[in-house]
Image 1 (tube, helix red, strand yellow):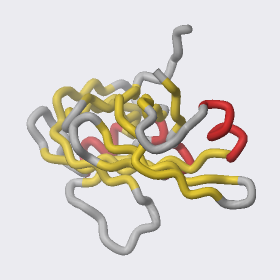
Image 2 (cartoon, one colour):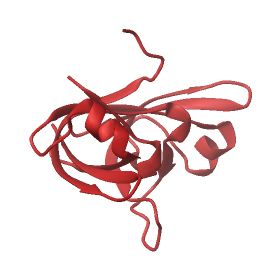
Image 3 (cartoon, helix red, strand yellow):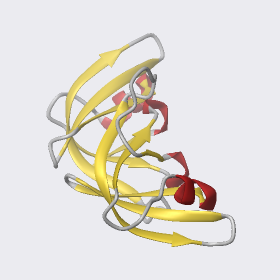
Amino acid sequence: MSLSIRNQIPGTVTAVTSGEVMATVKVRLDGGQDLTAAITLEAVKDLGLAEGSAVHAMMKSTEVALATARVEGLSIRNQLPGTVSDVATGGAMATVKVTVDGGELTAAVTKDAVTDLALAAGSPVVALIKSTEVSLATT
């Protein structure tokens, strides 16, 4: 199966915390960073997720926000530090490729954001991803 989701980073499940309908799944990415996904209990069961399961964490580029430093006092759990490797700007939007430990992420942001944050190859950034926007696939 091919997917349009560009951001696919391998990792291993380190914990599953179940609620009534949803679960949080902690994933240690191959680069050593931790990521949290909030998915349905049905998905946890269907994928057979448990501690030690190999997964790919996936997120759409439109769901990846960028900051120039870690952000405190924010509900977004996933803050992955990295370095901008490429910026491609169009009339209104831009794609920013970010190298993180264990992989690469693409963020779709406005052209104005690229300018305001002075994003360019080599810039340090932090990719911000809500746990509800992280999907998991088994390998």
